[in-house]
Image (tube, rainbow, N blue to C red; front, top):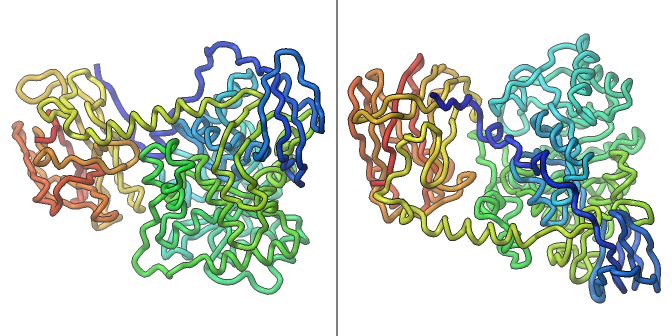
Amino acid sequence: MTARVRRRAITALLLASVLIPAGAPAAQQAQATLIRNVRVFDGERVLQGHDVLLEAGRIARVGRGVPAPAGAAIVDGAGMTLLPGLIDAHTHTFGDALREAAVFGVTTHLDMFTDVATARAARVQQDAGQARGRADLLSAGVLVTAPGGHGTQFGMRIPTISSPDSAQAFVDARIAEGSQWIKIVFDDGAAYGASIPSIDRATMRAVVEAAHRRGKLAVVHVSDAASARAAIEEGADGLVHLFNDRGPGADFARLAASRRAFVVPTLTVMMSITGTGGGAPLVRDARLAPYLLPARGDALAQGFPRRAGAPVRTLDSAFAVIRQLRAAGVPILAGSDAPNPGTAFGAAMHRELELLVQAGLTPIEALRAATSVPATAFRLADRGRIAVGLRADLLLVEGDPTVDITATRAIRTVWKEGVPIDRESLARSVTAARQRQDAGAASLAGGLVADFESGALAAELGNWMPSADTYAGGTSSGEVAVVEGGAGGSRHSLSVTGTITPALAYAWYGAMWMPAEAMSPVDLSSRPGVAFQARGDGKTYRVMVFARSKGTMPLIRTFVAGPEWREVRFAWSDFGIDGHDVMGVVLAGGPQPGPFELRIDDFGLR
């Protein structure tokens, strides 16, 4: 029996839902809880020394001297601030994102593109009361983009649109899938030195009008000032990125205000686009570090690689736009764009709030941007504020974030529908992950990573997944599968087959082994290098090693795979490294164009 893995990019692979199983026990009942004598930021203003009573998952009373019901849990809020659960107004949700987000006080994800099945499963569980241990997911589902446009590079097969006349049918299909608003991509990549297909302005206008006919919001992804202006002129309800290619122009904010548009700046990601990891300061913050998985810390510190010839960007223009928007009264929403470089689910929102304050918002305005403002913009009447009858999605922090915005990081308790989030289970996972990462290659018996004898795509350390040049704009494709027949007469081996296309000079398709999650570096220096058995069609193949100290470009050695099994060995020194910070190893076909067939067995560190 063959265990097959379809070609997907990393993002698509991780879309497999790890939400609470549909068969989970009935929702935990929320115990009545009285938070006494706490500073309350209610989503709009500050109330000093108030009590807040939570009952049956809702806010039952807000005031002074509130009596405690029999059996209620009492929380002393002296010196603390109670806020509505944070709303991240720009995410891409997959994996364990919703559980992690809640640990950091984000109780609602406004998702701008994810797998339809993931979004549907989340809604079903939320409706059944099975989501109290994680953030809620509300989603645009599949975005609206041109063939080959932004959003198609992740290896997922998604519908695309080419002309205005198909706009209504396209929008109706998204709504039928469950899209709760419509996200449009109007971006040709020029702002970042790229060239990618984009829908034209007429098609954007038609999609906006089609969404409005069905009572849905239409938001637009842009990356430059001209596209931002065009989107607002064509009726977009909001922009889900800002721009930093130039200043806003004298009347940009007046235009946005006159059209009643809102803006989600995503400053953390915009900083990452400058080459500096937008969330890097969070990694060093002792208030957050115990809850950051190693891979999340690495992601927060990571910036986008700069394309050759791309213009140098700073945040100055974006900050100028925000100051103008604020002065014009345009709603500004906090959104992280996690999990892009420089971000991590939940944690990045705390950096986004800090950057909004640096851009010119007051701390109270920044807190509104993460609570009541997105609730209003996305028509969420049951959350975003602390008021009687609303959901008891709450965040209790030490100190006063209405004065020092970084106090949102000093989290004491998070409630989702009145039930405390189990933050310590994630902290234990973080400790275990760090121990595994520290153990690295030392945990491998004989250095063997994978012999595939189970018939599954599994590894003793880390994990395997396909790797394709689609990330870089290529079109090579293939399949990674565990198949019958291996080296030395063993039962199984890894099959990597595909077709390399000449769209890139360095085109590839292959199987990637990552020693830790999400390209986190692992110390493998206790082992001399990599070794494996190979068999193939006589072509030349590549071993591509990624090391943190060498940046984003792979270190490459080649080998020939003929019709007989043979051992291939490379020392770390062959790649110019010592193995202390290995993030991944790819066994790949290419760059020669055409079909290829490669088999791998007994992959290890030896």
